[in-house]
Amino acid sequence: MNQPVTQLASDNYSGICPEALNYLLEANQGDAPAYGNDAWTQRATDCFRELFETDCEVFFVFNGTAANSLSLAALCQSYHSVICHENAHIETDECGGPEFASNGSKLLLARGAQGKLDPADVERLITRRSDIHYPKPKVLSVTQTTELGTIYTPDELRALRKLADQYGLKMQMDGSRFANALAELDLTPAQLSWQAGIEVLCLGGTKNGMAVGEAILFFDRELATDFAWRCKQAGQLASKMRFIAAPWLGLLETGAWLRNARHANAMAARLEQRLREIPEVNIMFPRQANSVFLELPPPVIQALHTQGWLFYTFIGVGGARLMCSWNTSPETVDQFADALQKALDSTSGVR
Image 1 (tube, rainbow, N blue to C red):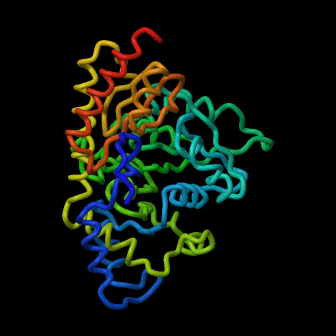
Image 2: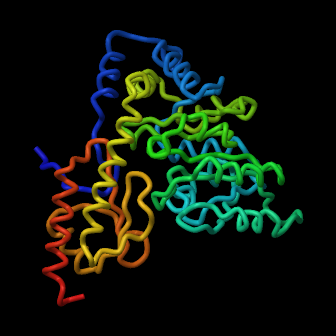
Image 3: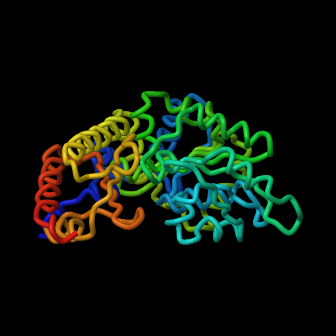
């Protein structure tokens, strides 16, 4: 048996939460129609519509890259462009998936503090050129929570929506950690999505306790025309769809999706509190959801890795991201804080 890892690296590392697993096992009793023509998929779809208080179109795909890439491809042609933050996942971590799925739509990168789009810089990109030789801006993509762990408020989203309306753009949200933002702001799903101007939401399940599967919600149903064919062509139509839909139902019907998010956020808040007690630690961005970013000297990072701690270091030189999930324990948080203090003490003369 492999030993369990000691990690604050990613909520992708976590296992399946009990609610998702229980519903998955229930769906495994007997046979059911294939390709989404089963009762589980219908129930999950109806549950999303009730939860978001609107008659949206719902599709299930295997992962977030497919959700983002296919939804963006549905919103624009190959000669269009998608405006996103320079740190957005679709730019830094999708291996060109959005461009590939859309047959060439270009990503235009906007700036903004703390990972959030600055409307003024977005407008700069929109109006920079309008000639036929330049890819025409068509979609505005936002990430909730952002890649730096911060959260868009409804007012911030509406400000971007106003800009999108002014220039005829659609708005898509990469919501891989949408539940964490929702739990932190204590809003309804509708208030943080379509009521704030989002037309298409890619809702993350994997980071919230599922084994596999993301949901794509089209609040503007016309934008979903022929989207089922797009999923099929991309290899994202699950033949045994109930095994993606049933765990979603487990999260939604039991309320686990928000409980999981609240727990992950609470563990990150605990981690932030412990880290602020260490004078040598500099926290890079506000802790607003389930991640904490901090600056650490390379010898300290190496010492922690040597001890077996797993975390990512990709936000600049010395930057470390610590991510909590639905199953992160207070003990893990405290053990990391203690290990960090010891690593700082042991390397104090070699920085």
